[in-house]
Amino acid sequence: QVQLVESGGGLVQPGGSLRLSCTASGFTFKNYAMGWFRQAPQKERELVAAIDLFGDTAIFGDSVDGRCTISRDNAEKTVVLTMDRLEPEDTAVYYCNAVWPGTYSPDDKDRARSYFASWGRGTQVTVSS
Image (tube, rainbow, N blue to C red; front, side, top):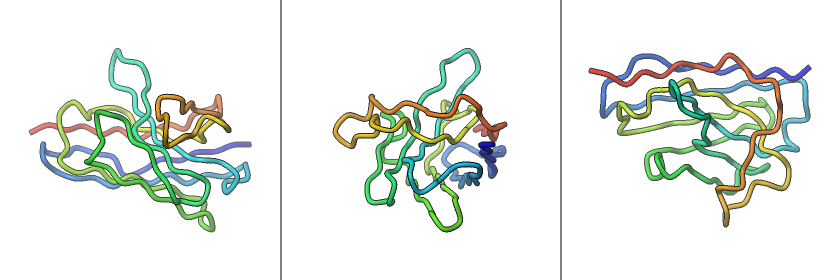
């Protein structure tokens, strides 16, 4: 059974930073690109960042590009997202998921799609003063 457990969210002031962590189980983690997605109220879920199988390349959504890093540890089955210079527009529930095989591409980040239908609970990030 696939399990994705996100943590690290909270209330952050504008301009602040955060570090989100995802622990995965129930599938062969090292065989999948992994991604962080977010969903703000009344908006569709969107890709924040994704990383390839080995952690060699990453792609970022336009709204966070330049403010994020993503990393993974295949031995620990974790993927970490850090974000700097947070803005109120970053307020959302953040989720991790595998990336649909074949849709991860550093040359076409808009192709990336989430893979597992079952999502974790996510972690709420609220950026507010």
